[in-house]
Length: 78
View 1 (cartoon, rainbow, N blue to C red):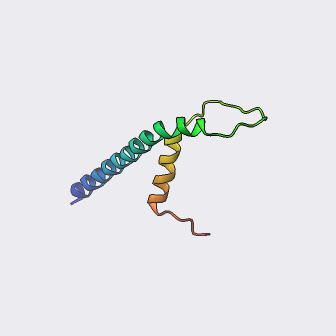
View 2 (view 1 turned 60 degrees about the horizontal axis):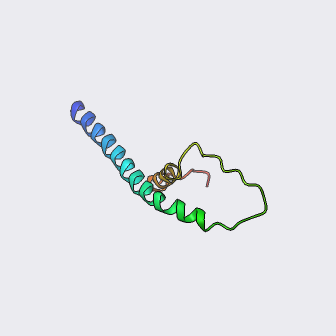
View 3 (view 1 turned 30 degrees about the vertical axis):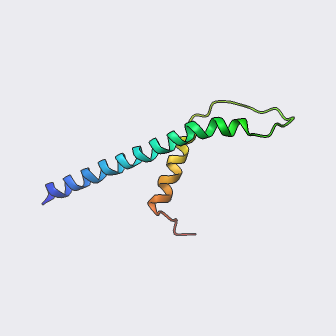
């Protein structure tokens, strides 16, 4: 009986990892077309702007946000 539950938990972990990869792949495809278009439509300002490369890509950040929203996690104090 323990072996079956271990196999099920392993399969659930694989499904979750595959789900994350699918979400990331979709978001990454979207960001590849969205970001260049977005950058060309930004308003120009007189202020100096820093254009450093972020540590995480936009699609990575969006994947974290989407998976958090899908998890249904809500803090108890809110």
